[in-house]
Image (cartoon, rainbow, N blue to C red):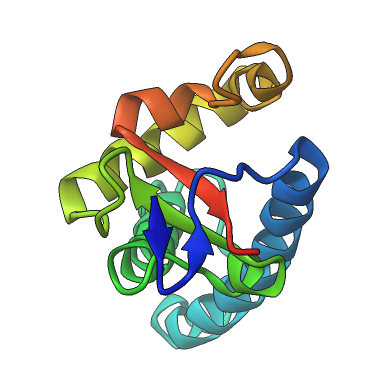
Length: 143
């Protein structure tokens, strides 16, 4: 498939995808710092403790908002953009919020299992991660 003269059949390498994920993880960490700074006054300026279950849920929501917004608005996080990668559905359309949710929570599940679902890219004939299948979306190299 061609998009404005670009070949969307070219898949980014595993290392390119890993670099984009790493870049985005660093950006997300910065977003978490800001989100935490906004919430600290509500906790008396004190660090959050392990018995305050709402804090990890808050960060999970912030994370989903971060990725979901980028994925549904142009298909590129800053990491994907830096590495010339675009996320689209299998039919080369922009993701909807449902697909973004499947992809995000699938990614969380993959992290829980030590990234095995991401490393699956190396062995899969289509070079898909588990969350690619679950969300019916994948990344394309924008040559």
